[in-house]
Length: 514
Image (cartoon, rainbow, N blue to C red):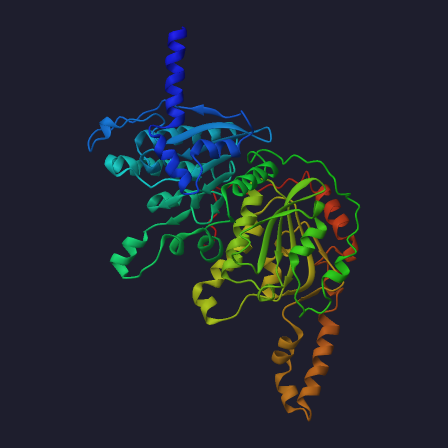
């Protein structure tokens, strides 16, 4: 037995260290951690249980039969994050550049199946060079199996992709199918066709970072939801996100320890938000004042920043917050902000996270570019997401709520459970100036003093149809509240809705706008 165990320990040591000590040095020289170092940072100390550590490929040709390292270039297994089970796989760039082959893919397939069966989150630590060319189409089929399982797991368990190296070609589609993508500046890139291919086909010259670096996907394409300067900070936030999310779609999020009094007043909001609807402010300050301890984890902070989507806790319970951002484009809804918020709402609904919506929106962004870009169908994505959501939903109108954008931002008419408003609310079809230009255009033009006549009509329109209690008188909002009561009223509303149950008509699935 001693001899057998010694042999086993030797094989495990070889699998852990890799076949080439210099490969580890090269990985560190690039400013990158190894696969096992990353897993150690992600999981609780000593909790990792590896699977198929001694797996080896069976391919032949192109010298592969002479290179059969253990693990085949991917480390798979499970462990815990803050005591809760999490499945993880990590590409090992030291072996075949992290390229995927048949055995490599089979390991990931099995792990994904286990994660779905166990109802636990799945984290992928990506640092691979795509398909293993020497294995041909078999490697491509391996990616197909991953994509199919990504789709099957969607809305069932949280899926998080952490990009810690290059991800090219079809390999980039797996992260795109997951719920959240984390990237690290300088070391991670994602693209379908690389710089060399682009130059040969189109003549355009670019670099890997300019084409698909972290800042590109975090601020331009919207592919990355979180961007960091180093791997340690990145993986720490992955751990935090996992700690506040439910393990699966059947689990009700467990309440955390409440350190911020539920009865705390928010009187500072009276000064934080200007009564003048034309004055900008940072809605993140409003969110921070309402939620527990001012802590929020913003999703896609640098993309479509005219809307804020963030996870936070209210009364110890995790909630999803969607808020128009007046500091950027006056908080108007456009193509990108509609897409961003729609996907966030869908995620929260899939995993039983209540939604809190803060409304200060002047409408949808007008313009030929927006119309030709499909603002109708993109705006409809957000409308569909809210209408389809069955989780507790509380909305609050801070100031402006005009036209179709008011309806889309979780109004009572599309299913908000509780609709609130501050006394500064302006809920209307459009702003008074625009309405008067349409309704009284001829009258004001024919007046002796058109300017004075127009101003008079604007005052009348505001007094008649835009006063802060117009919507409340017609049951469109449940209450007009003092900003100082905001935290208390929202948490009370969410507590009341905790056991909300909705019967939906039987269907295979919906057909959302694309």
